[in-house]
Image 1: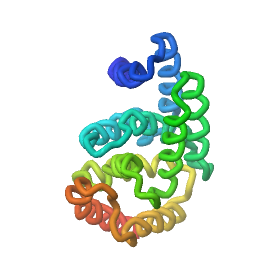
Image 2: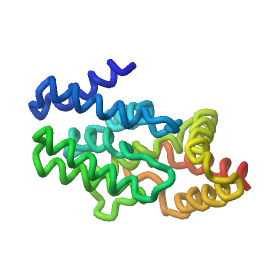
Image 3: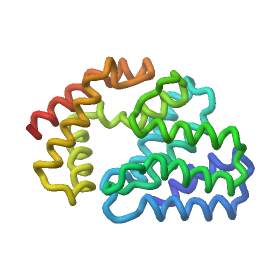
Image 4: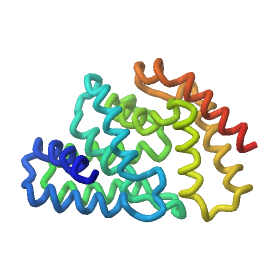
Length: 209
């Protein structure tokens, strides 16, 4: 399984003329973080799914490699006991990508896209950020059984929180998405997934209420 992910990582970094040794070393760092215990959803499988969705809509991208890099790093720091995972992930990405001699302009864009995943808002209307955000939330519009597995995995990640408290907090998060004019920013994903996503969120709220 790791070999498949390494091939994807290598194909991306080759575009930036990164050496094979640095590709392997940086990939080991990625595996270490995404393989941490307690990651029932925010693991390499999630990254693979995000990358696949990004690839499906790459014709909408201005800077496809930057979106890919942001996808790889957007959840690299994930601790359900702290509120600043996105900030820490952006900091980590900047350090790794700087060490790999990725252009500063690309690193800045990656940083901004990762930070946008904190609230899943795209106030500037940047098309690349829109693609990343929508890919990250594509699970919302999945088939009911897949969505339920996702919801169960997230609950496990917050296993330290008492059930009653978790239910209230989770309902609040889901309602925030439902209160928006639309969940998805890109026209294709809005058309494909918006209604199914709303159905899934409402169904989960019903189970939690």
